[in-house]
Image (cartoon, rainbow, N blue to C red):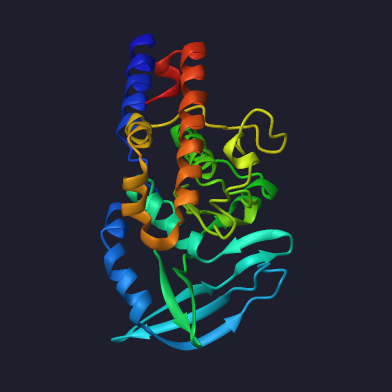
Length: 275
């Protein structure tokens, strides 16, 4: 009996270690370039603006068509202070590109696209099973070892939002698939450069609402990629969609993340923090 339990546990840990931390499936990641071209070049055949209750900046839901392929997308063009917050369509694209560069693949393909003569961010529409608010309200929970993996995905989300300083993550912009992968949307308030964002991580023990699943478990491969980030690599990944000031602020937050991880590794042991 003990031997059977041990074998099961060993298999479980091996499964977790082998599981990719990318949230889009490999075949979906392989289609990124195709969808980027589609979003940029497809014709807008229908469009409807969201209400303020659906999105503060009132994005547009577009129906795009090209060569017989039809797909929905969201489009937004906020720029500057809106409702007391700095909003930018460019950070939507930067978040997608940085997520892709780091191998997280948590943000849907997002490109620059003109609509009615205005530039904005156009993001592939993802149909999800639930959002995180529905998961909590309906008291749903992944079963067995999949629950442990879902917790790790939440840790990845925390780490990414700390890195890009996304202060606007709420429960409705985590999209959850039926197999419990997490897709992240809405990064219009990310990459802010205010003094607070250069001194303190948004997701840490002091955040009363979000103190659970801070960054307790992260993939070694992801952490190594973080360590090797520099201004040149970020610039190469995001192009013109972040300023030098925003890139430097991102690197300062990266340093804070690594320092936080080093502290927890010393307290708990590396095997309990990195996998």
